[in-house]
Image 1 (cartoon, rainbow, N blue to C red):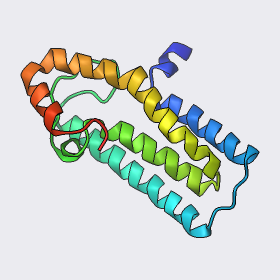
Image 2 (image 1 turned 180 degrees about the vertical axis):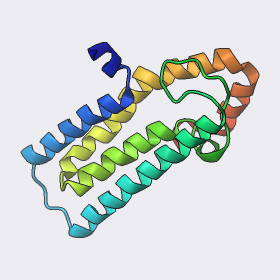
Image 3 (image 1 turned 90 degrees about the horizontal axis):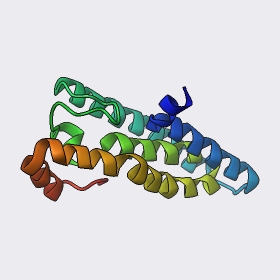
Length: 148
């Protein structure tokens, strides 16, 4: 059960969000109300990006699950802007949550989570995609950035 959860980036997102919220509680900083509103906007934008990317992958008949072999190289929709739009949305969501919860000290978790995602998930996924799609992936990789 724990191993299955550890294989899901969303489980790690929850842990990083909890750690960020704890930091915000331990290091309380004033935050203008407008930034809390921006946080809610970022949460909404992140959810829209996640759904858009997942639907794009679904339409291409490939998996959204990390660790599973992709059936198609998806390069349209949000994948024109980022090779990892769902992971990017995770980072935006985390930043938005920290602002919405008035826990700006927790924003330090955003780059930490980005590094974690890259090392734990993205590098492995990129190797599988490169082995599966070869030169087509290499061309895509050369024109679209990992994040943005």
